[in-house]
Image 1 (spheres, rainbow, N blue to C red):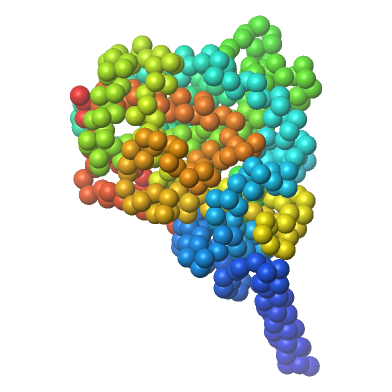
Image 2: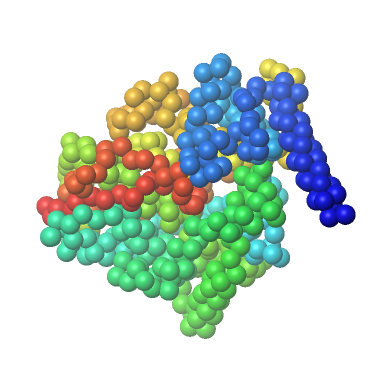
Length: 496
């Protein structure tokens, strides 16, 4: 009696696996049946390849897929995350279709949202069409140049704290992980402008705030396994749940914002920061939960991104001394040598520094892809092919930014590429996205980045650390959502 039971169980398992394989194989014909070019998806990961195992960066994998389609003469294609079909525009014309021309067909990002289960999952970045339009309309007037200029003194003060942190390191000519330094600097800047608190991460990297935010961008294998079981990874937007589904983080940020708002209301405190903007929007019906969610979004959008751009830029300066010297000359000629007196308008006038930052964001797009979701039937121009509502879309930014047809010798750091931006093909350079759902806070992100860069270049020289590589290697096993490299970004700092 015992043996037949085992045999039946094994037959059941075998039959289930075979059925599962047949089902997947059918799923992998979705794009072919529609007449859309596709590659050779493999069971069970689809087109994810080694990135599904953490042995290759997802962004590098998407770059590879980009070139396979393009080299095959295709302007768009279809890929699979596991058995989930994803529309994959390659040519700039079709990228523009998604982001601008047919924006009403792709207004959503397709991000995971469940306010009851994960309160922080809903914000301006993740919200679907109508909800996004409503919150964007409220916030857009508060991101003008004038509003950002009013926050400048906060950023200026933090830049001076950055110099104080670097000075003793430069006097000893130490090798320092600049990514870590800039993470702490941006935490101080954005923590102050988002939550109205003195974070002091530069002085105290072990503070409660610093330890809490470090949990925002990294995830455990257990959380990834839970996501696969509960939501699946067929839709890249489900990744949002990984970073926001954390009860201790929710409690921390809700308590932090509640205490700050209560203190300001009680003591009639008004500050030129983002939290004050959100507090004023209470009169338009913005709820406390929405205030917390937008404050957290504002913080997360600037934290890893700005710190990454700064550290990547200094890495390139260290390996391109003539470019570093040229940027420093512009800073000193236009603004002088007292960085504490650098003005908002002065920082904006740094045209060569601006080119250096643009080239940094080209070579190292902080987020290597853009994602959207089709919300109504879309016919691909020049074909009879339609994209169905609910279909995710991925735009491979790393592939576009490092395409030698658009940027010759793409791994060379060359700010002169941006001498005449009219020569840059539209919709292949997308550091802040494009169209109505571009990054609303990019001006503030640029000003805090340019100011920090100007301040440190004025005071210090940066050279490669001993044994460091000129070409940074993307970390394939990172659990960060942003473009990350192996081993940090170590540079030697010298006082000028």
